[in-house]
Image (cartoon, rainbow, N blue to C red; front, side, top):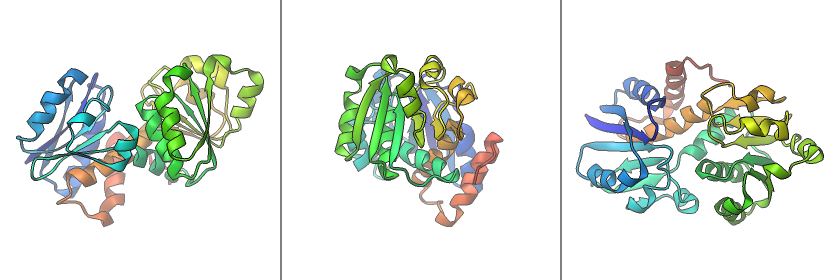
Length: 279
């Protein structure tokens, strides 16, 4: 029996154990899955311990997504661009591979709701999840990207990534948005809110009720104030969470994975949360 965990702080609220256990049970994969509360200062020691134990891998959430990057033996091209991972795969030889399946989670969640491409997008926030959203936007064919941030000076990494991916990017501080600009932004066909739970509440008055698709990565509490105010289609972060976890299962349980059962695994995860899948 190999072990896998989700790492983060705080972590008691995580739904990852429920999702992963449902998948491994369905696949008959000999993997246990639990949660460990961990802060960035513990990343180096944990990475060292992964090399010696009977590990399949780790799911990584806030605030650890960049803390583990220096301790990997190999990084995917995505992680090299983003500087953030959400997945550590422990290979048979004990080497550690860093991947970011948040991008898959975002793209697949949108596909479930019928969106497989867009030329324009807006992203609220500029942290590690925003970087994943920028990568997802590029995969969806976005050409024009608007970043709404609290401080433009802290959005440097996001702007650099967007430009590296060939996206025409504009940055707006939330405090500078007036009624006319809010009306224009409200017409965006695709909006990612990458802000932590409740962090977008104070932005609702400025952002208003958009008419496009809103994918709000926050899911507890739900609906968020932003989701409640939204005029278009709203997708909760649980949909992203499921799809990014499916990719992690594929990587952790490679010996038991059968691509033809991807739909079964995805549906089992949705069922484990009591969440209806939109298709």
